[in-house]
Image (cartoon, rainbow, N blue to C red; front, top):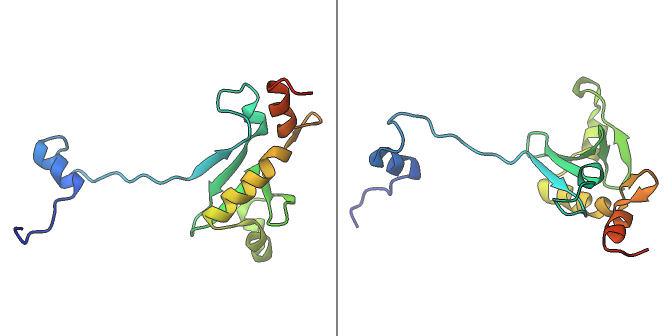
Length: 128
């Protein structure tokens, strides 16, 4: 052991010549998840999808067509940011784990043209 701190991956890439010295390291942040019971290659997935979107300060929203889900499973219109009250935000913003759970619970029940996402899955599998 040399007593020197370990090199970061960025420092290793600089030392190998893969990155120009002094180039700032890019960061990556997940800001959106797509949640659906339909498989990714299904032609109808996009209409039966709920998004979980990062809204800052560690808070996530469960959204679909400019509506947000609250913890009771009710959808509400999401107004422009300057018109959102604190109590509305408290009811429609969650930690990441909770937002993903709520989206997963709601996903089978999304309705399009009178059919739920669960109906669409059953139809694809040949069930009546």
